[in-house]
Image 1: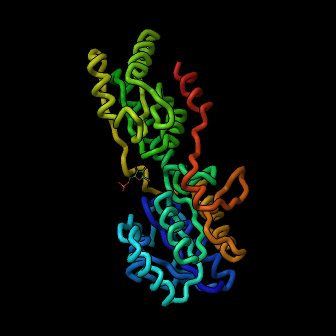
Image 2: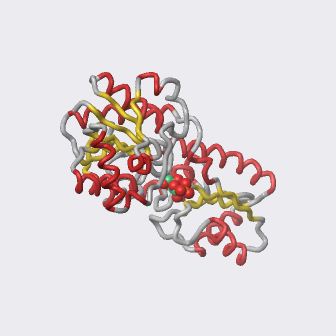
Image 3: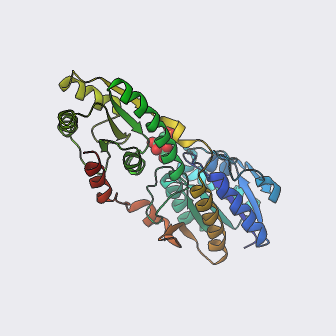
Length: 323
Ligand code: F6P
């Protein structure tokens, strides 16, 4: 394999740049040509593709976002869109692809491989950490640290005013960010889509805390929780506990930005090299991940269809430590 291309797609994640850098430099080290595709699948369809050199990725291991830009492409979901993308790649003689993104990205990659058979290796890049086949995804650790920093600050004001704060963190279908922030931030309760927590559970937790002379509380809510978003949950709790001073803070997209942590830079660098090596060694339709600190390749179909369950021990830990 002599020519490969790399792109980022879906929600950006801190560490994507470190991954692109690793892909580019690993490919050059192995005497391959490497092309960057901008704006994810949209750029593949439009031919927004350029040859990358070693200097193309200088001074970026520490930068958040993605220099290749990102997008969620509607056109790639159509047969015509994918045909145009294939033609663009063929015109340039590209023989292998490295896709950095999450489940949406790999769903597209899997369909594209089934239709056109271009070997593709995915690097898990999403703050959600919801991909089967890797213990951690690029950007998750940074997002947790960013959210934790915000929760620490919220705790200061919550304690000063004797308030209850509902803090909403990202995670459409997954409570990984919420649970880690809950433990690291000393939350009284964590609400995640993977386990059911009723409004009565929330009310009881707050009442019991009050009985134990707790003057302030933090409840971390994953945006995908089955009870709704943090505003909706807080509203229903307020109806029952009108005497409590309740506030809501939605952390939102700040969790997606910023300089990646050391953990994410190293993870992204390892995955970038492993993706290039995977292509060289004949991997075709897989996501590369790290499991128990070792590189593993998992078929895209499995990576996107199998769920990565939240460790129930972590949920129990929040309950025990919030006493
Ligand atoms: O998948 C990453 C993520 O940040 C989710 O946690 C969140 O639900 C979603 O992307 C937000 O997407 P967008 O940036 O398109 O609003």
